[in-house]
Structure formats: structure tokens, C-alpha cells
Length: 187
Image (tube, rainbow, N blue to C red):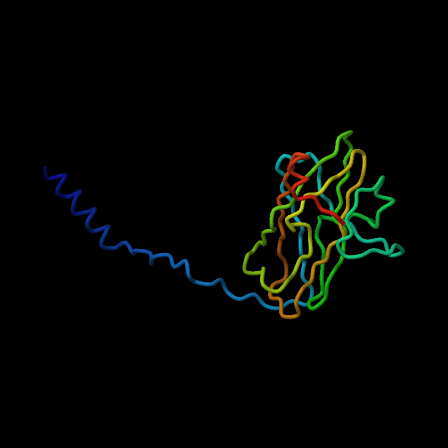
């Protein structure tokens, strides 16, 4: 009985000396990021029911193109895509924009149908001050068998953007031909 009494006193003593941590305040904003002259943007993808991989490319300087040009062509050489952009990361000067190509090769003998869910930005506080004219536009796309699909896109960085690097992630989702036809992209 004496051991229980002393054990109880020791526990009470320890509890009296323990500091309680303050409750978490989920409404506290993270510290404001500073402006940067050059901003790195990594374009990232996750895939659901689609066997292809999206890559990003520079645009050939000698080929005329328009923003949002979208096609499935016989080969990458017959598209405005030039060299693949390393690590899917582009650098854009504050107050400027960068146009580039999203592209996928379909090595199969069947068409692939897909759409993109709205993009997500990490860290989310960096989502203020840029516009990505991309492919998450409530349309479904077709990559024809043995062809290269591409879309010309643009990332605009506002002159007042705060931050130095962020990730833009899309989920690409494969769909059936029937579902694709309900939301088919028509250039």
C-alpha cells in the first residue's frame, strides 16, 4: 500500500512539472514568402487507369503554333515539340510567361482516352499569382494508336508573385471511348 501511495505522489509531481503545449491554431497563416526574380515550377503527374506518361517539351522555334493547339500526330518530329525539359521543371521570370508542350506517345495499337483533373499546387499558399493555361478544362482527349499527342500550354507568373519554387500536379485519368465522347475536345 505504501508503494502505491509513493507512486501516486511521484506521478502527481511529474504532472505538475510538465508543460502543456498550447492548442494548435489551424487559422495561423504560414509566413509570407518573398518575391523572387525567377520562379521554378515543376509540372508533376499522377496516373489513374492510363498506361501513358506525360512529358513536357520546349517548343521548336521555327514552327508556328497557337496557345492550346492540341493534336495527335504521327510522330514527335511532326509536332511543335522540341527537346524534353529536364525534370519537368521550367523557370519563369516574375511578370513573364513560358509556353511549352505537354506530350504523350502512345506505343500501343489502341487509342487511349483521358482527361485531367484540376491541378493542385504545393505549397498551396503559392497558388496566388500565377495562371496555368493547361489541359484541365473539362474536356477529354484522344491519343491515337502509335501517335504522339501534344498540347501547347502557357504558365503566366504575375509580377507580384511571392515564392521561388512550387509544384503543379495534375491527375490524368483514363476513360472509355463512350465517356470520352461526352466531353470530347474539338479543336
